[in-house]
Image (cartoon, rainbow, N blue to C red; front, side, top):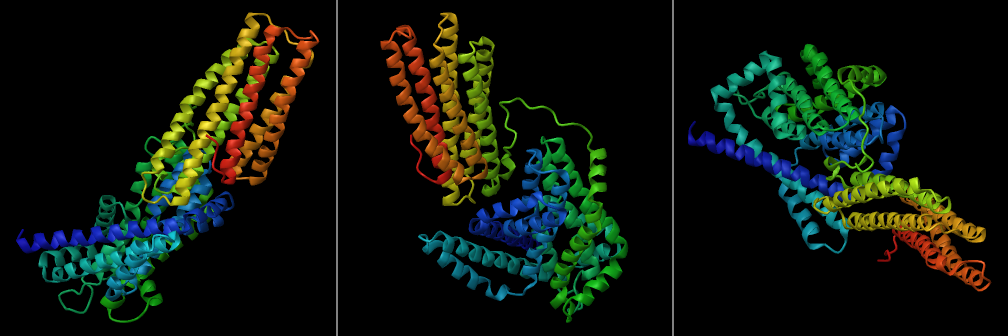
Length: 556
């Protein structure tokens, strides 16, 4: 291999690296600009398959990566937030959404690449005060970098037309479509981006052959490689499903079957498909229009594939259930159900999963409040033991949630607003865990009460029971506020917190009255007041959770 060839390969990979960097940076900018709106798109996921396809296409258009969307979907399926039919429809939409990148590349705006870089650079680096302008600038800057990479690849590929070895290889691909499918698959598996390999294909096809007029590979030679690119992109889903739930593995299998089946069907009709694409695409010299033809072929392939499989989603679900047998294994209470580190690069999705896990943690603590009430009022020592076990699970799970939230700060895609939300969720995790600590304190008081055979008056029991019920109501409203982002529930918690403070003061006065009238033994005073105080502190932490939902700085 001579030095010129080595230089050509290095430059080609350098251009590819700039393209991938630009695409990822553009994805970051788009996500920062519109990422929070993706939550509204996520709400569409629970509807019918058509809405799922639309949602998948929209999310992928923002993330600029079908692989990222698929990984996110696998995370949701693994967490039980999404059923397999929904996931399949979203992946179909993701395959359509990813074709937008190829369409953008087909526009011959490479001459203006440095203009985009310059404008985007000014907005991105010099207008930091307005976040949204900075994010838009980042997107424009990345868009320019993307085309700079394309220009580099295009210029590097031109000398290939004079290489007889390369021309012979392209002839082989044209004559043996399976070879093209394998080549496209391997390229995408290595690069981990079908958009990048299709960009390379578009540049290669736009290179003139030995005659100086026609494409070095032609549309019929490009189509098998394009099909292989679509197969190769499924490797990301397969990797993301390793170690995940059975449902997640089935989702990855469905993605592979979907893309592989499309290729197995289309590969038999390449000449006819090429004629169809040429018919619907702009007319002109082959090397001038073939990039658009490849973009249209990419889009039509995924559209036709989706139309074909849409009525067959139920059959596909049954097929992957047969291919990937098994049942979901039970998880320990202290093990996260919703957290998935694979989706951290999409903060809006990671925040959604963390909120679901915090809601689960809140429900565990809600049960602790009920058990602590039963252990104290009913003198039930078995409840004390049950609560201690749950408290240990709560501590372990809270630690894992906080660790997950902390990892979000290391992602480059997180915005200041999202970082603030993550910080608030970390406070919420601590608040929920503190409520569990107070439940543990009350359980310990119950143990002391049972051990010493203390018996409170019916009036005292009634007051403590009322106080517990108020705390349970506050906790339930806090969980609702957190899970649904309900400010109405959060405001109700704040109102109940005022009622809780008033009740604690009243109960202290009532107890003093009973002491003065000899209706209560003095040795019970410490336990009674401590129990009431611990319940009141639960209310304080519920109020902190409500503040986090509303957006008020939490009390530390």
